[in-house]
Length: 203
Image (cartoon, rainbow, N blue to C red; front, side, top):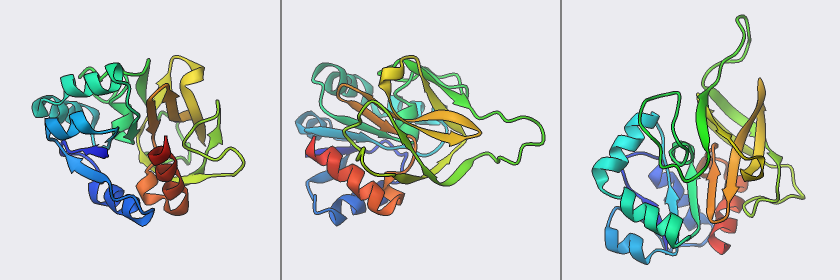
């Protein structure tokens, strides 16, 4: 069973619908501790501001259980957009501490005066795969849908599963043992997103 964590932040319906489209119906939206304890995989979604996301997680009372399932039980866990950012130590967007599952921080896009690049970064972009991610096909050019103003910067290059170009190259996918993350929205990325979710289901 894949548990999509319900903490009030994220494109929940789109994620559940995408799994139905690939034929996986063993996916539930939940904040129930007993269901999360039984889950074989976790998805941490998220849309919005970093501090708001951490405050929602804190008020849900789920952080100790998530730490146990992810860091001790080491079940496969996927963070999406803000969900991936919350896995870091912290963010320039706010003052709250992150979950700290990955050694890295969240940075704001900053472009030179007169740049034609807009914030948020929005739209379809190809990714550059690195380090052999289990969630993407290394033989194909893959593109995904992005909407974000902040990006992840990992301390360790081996934790970077893919990068993307927007002004500069930034980390757009992470992978560290059982922990995976995508800055883009696979649930809005059509066949590429379906492929990613299917690969996550099979880990």
